[in-house]
Image 1 (tube, helix red, strand yellow):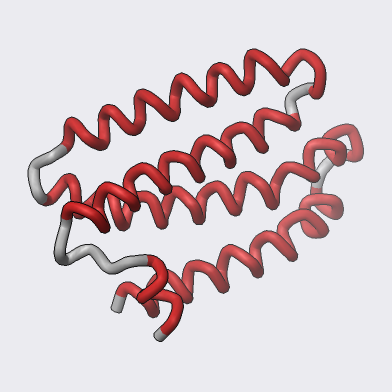
Image 2 (cartoon, helix red, strand yellow):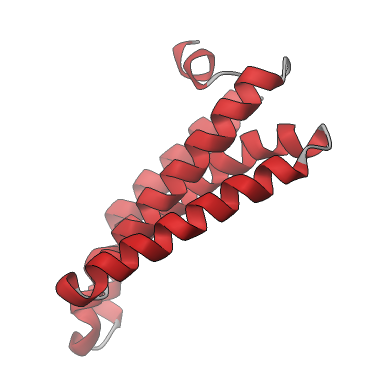
Length: 130
């Protein structure tokens, strides 16, 4: 079930990444077209958060919510540091990339904990290879 869900969400994510930017160019004021380039990054970030939540739920279900809080705190500090170091030089668009990097880190932390500690957690490799 989880495999079908993730597969469906990945397909939807890819479709959205491909079609939203051109549609936005048609329906928005040209003044905003520069910002359209970050839309696919933001969409993919949403997919990463979906994956993160699937694995964080194992930890949550087992009553180890403090692990989720610690991971979230670490990632928040990383995100703030990345934005602090890059925002002034690269502008607002870098914030989309730093957020994606932070979400990837959050996923890696929660995934690693869930797969190591929770017997019921399905490894990403097993999810992909079947």
